[in-house]
Image: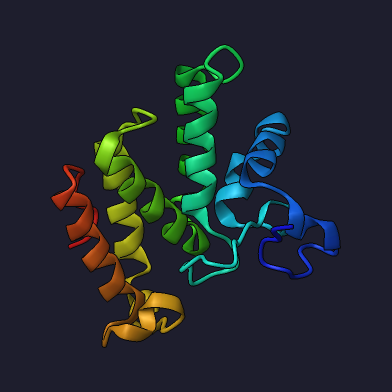
Amino acid sequence: MHFDHITEIGGDWMAAQRSPEKIVRKALKRDELALLLLGKPKYQYLPYWSPAPGNTCIVSLLSALRDLVRDYPKDYPCEEIRNRLNQAIKKIVNIYEGIDPVVTCLVFESRRRPFGLPMDEIAADLKQSIRVFSFRLEKDRTGEGAQYPDGQLGNFRRLSEVAESLGGPSFCD
């Protein structure tokens, strides 16, 4: 039997066996996509192979959301999901903890545009948030930030270039 990353998640030992699809369905049902993006305990998902530097793999969760929209369009209409995801992004883009998940959303969306998000609008809000928190980001050596002399700010500059190379907008100076 395959088990995902065995860890206590929010006091729920069984959470390690949850699929990303079940986690996303739960967040949609409770209208808590912002909490899902922030990796709050009840929505954390970290497969054992994940390169995610934090406590949750946003890419796996976004992939599960994309698959729900693709596979169950009557239950998860693309326009509704786009609006709900965009609202969740707007809720978190201006807080420090929200920057990384919003960056991940933009890079994810850049390649194939599975949700049809208003990327230029999100990128403008994200760029402003990165400017506001630039000093703190430069000092942040957690996760991928450890690889850059300017911390997470350097990581976000790199990811902005990746998003542009995939056809998305730049979000970092």
